[in-house]
Figure 1 (cartoon, rainbow, N blue to C red):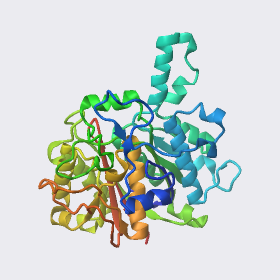
Figure 2: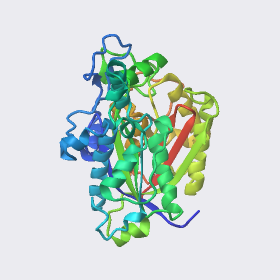
Figure 3: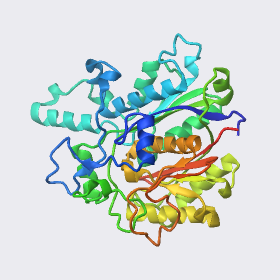
Figure 4: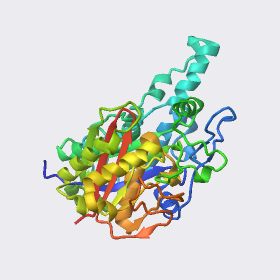
Length: 417
């Protein structure tokens, strides 16, 4: 492994509990939930009628209405979160005429689903008005890599530029692959994370058909309940989580505030089932072992884990088994939480949002809680920080996510020396 160190110097978020990092973090540590009835379309015929919708999002703060009309909502979220991340990192919004080498700044801000709303709307146009009325912006608004492309053009970032698709592990893998870009000297700075905006009729009905979603429609604030015995499915949400990763000496030279160091990354495949995680969490366990190996850390070094914790029967059970298999007796000592109780499941954005939670835990010494935990599940008997935040010195934090297709991703963050 290269001796180039990779650090976090900025972050930005759009979420159902806050449209910037301070509001997002305040909501999480105070146990606020952003889930409610879906307001954007009539859900009366849907099995699930709840989601974590972003609230009070004003795209005019970031671009003109004309430009916004050419971007799907997931891309708008990605740009808003990236703007906050760039500002928090002290990086100029126009890299071309700055002291930063723009050719060494890359972007991997990805989406698990892409422009589903645009695709749905234009399909309706095709059916009702014919192919001659389809928008010329359909394809560039729909494709999942387009957030990275637009962010690159917005700032003039000419380094490695791509989008990854690994379902609900997308954000984590985007940060992890950005880590390697810097390690192998392909870039000095990477803008990375995930964005999603799939709370549209086609997206919700698709997940309803899978019977993957909670149907606790009369009590949306308590519908997402990771590791609770009475969990009945996950709750869709949306938004974006973006980080600025930077080579350590590059960050020091420009006087950047260093928030944490990225020291490990693991990516594996279950090779098991299209939607269900591997029994006993075998693939996730290997991803965690891989990340620990790259970080040159042991299981006992981990202070906090932001679990994937989707509030589904199989995920929470098998994720617990994976942690036990890797951490052994330390699994009962480490602080764990799933912030999806508050945010719902951001799909491709989840890894970006939850990696920010890990860095904030390192910065503040506070573990955000797993809310809505009421009835213990004997299969999920670890310390999942139920309902109340707690103080803990966090030197090493882990984020882990998995996605349909058997994709597993793990990131390890460490307090900077």
